[in-house]
Length: 193
Image (tube, rainbow, N blue to C red):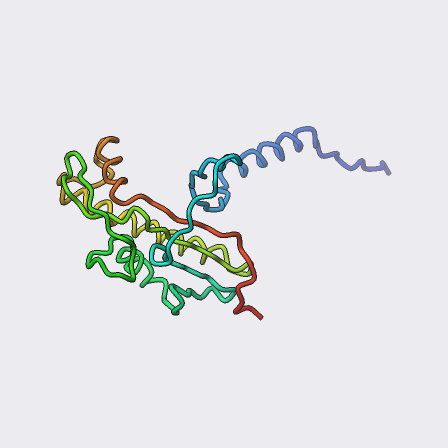
C-alpha cells in the first residue's frame, strides 16, 4: 500500500489578503473625533503695565457649574435652556436696569446711535468634576446668546443675517456686542460626592 501524502495549502498570498483587508477597514471606518471649542486667547498682559481696573459687580454675569452638572447663575439655580435668554438680557440690558451692565450710547457709522454695554463680561467657572459635555453645552448657550443678538441687530440694520455681512459690517456689529467670556480655572466648587 502506498502512503498518501497530505496536500499543502499555499499560504503565500495570505499575508497579501490580510494586508488588503486591513487597508479596507482603515479606509472605510469612521473615527469619532472629540468636539472642542474654537477660542482665540487674548495676548498676555505685559509685566510693565499696571493691572487693569477692577470690574464692577453689575458688569459681571456669573455662571457656575458644579460637580453634579448643575448651573448656578448669579447665585440662583437655572436650567440650561434658560441660560441663553438670561445671558442675552444681561448683554443687552434693554431696560437700562441698575442691576445689569452699564449702558453707553455710541454713534457708529451705518448703524447710527445705539445703546451698548461694552463693559459686560460673562464669567464662567466650573468644578473639576463637571462633565465635558455639560461644559460644552453651557459654552454653546453663551455663544448662542451673542450669535442671536448679533443676528437680530444685523437683520434690523442691514436686512441680512450676520453671517451674510461683509467683514467691515460684521466688525461694526461686534462693536455693539463684543464677546467677553472670562473663564476661570476649574476648582472644587462642590456638589459632588
